[in-house]
Image 1 (cartoon, helix red, strand yellow):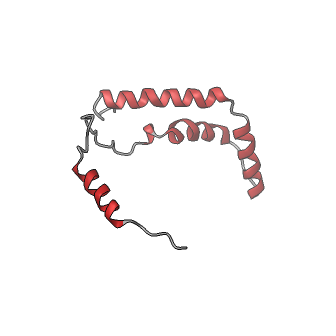
Image 2 (cartoon, one colour):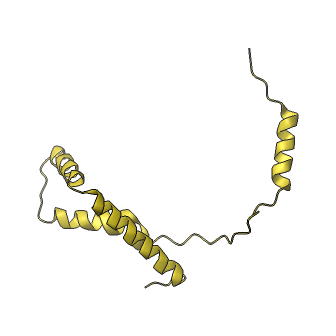
Image 3 (cartoon, rainbow, N blue to C red):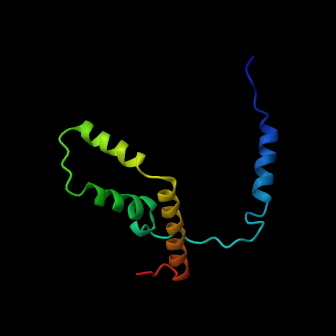
Length: 103
């Protein structure tokens, strides 16, 4: 048995969706901020910490890199991630408060 689409019901749903107020709660839509490495969690928290941890290390094989990564992530406790997430929230607030001019 092949399912059939009731096209008449579908057209009514589309009409109703288009007829509705697109912003029923009247929120202000803010423009997406331009990309900034200071606002990306991995760039300012994780990668800077990894860079410090990698200082002076010379990998010989791919498995050396893989082992280091496993060890690195295993060494990070939940507080490390929580601290990073909380500081990201503060960074975003600073950018919003300064209307994107935070440099």
